[in-house]
Image (cartoon, rainbow, N blue to C red; front, side, top):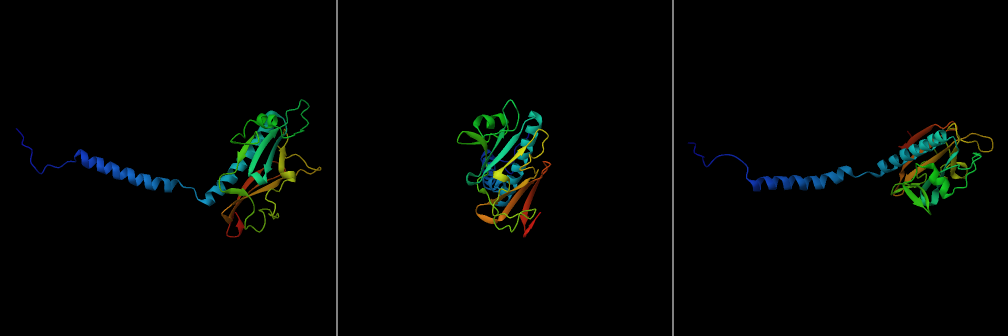
Length: 203
């Protein structure tokens, strides 16, 4: 026969419940803080997303062997993709809902029935305190494409405008902090790069 002594060690059910509640309370306080995205992270993530969407537009043009357009709407902080759906495939795009739905990849938001993408909350098109774009452009106009659009042909090249195959720049800023600026550049050959404005320089 073994006799249980009064000083035997162990946890009661109440003690275990209290410990679990303390851990739960600590997690409820610390996890949201750890997951909170800073304004700088918001802007940089938005620039990377715009770059990925431009790459998707280029790949869609190649796979469909049709012209695909990405249009940026500065006053709405919104952008959309359109694909030429004509039988002739001459690249005539009128920015209709049918053309937007034919692009099939940019459907995270909608504006007047046109599927597309909104910039994340707090991020807008703008140059903020950046003195110039990453390639020396003036940033008073944050969407440096002719008519605020870029088109990719069936080879994935930027479609020429007035005979010149040139790219452009999109500049983003946090609406509450003009020092937090990012940009995406597009070359005429369809190459992309994301930039961040830090300490008065593009990196």
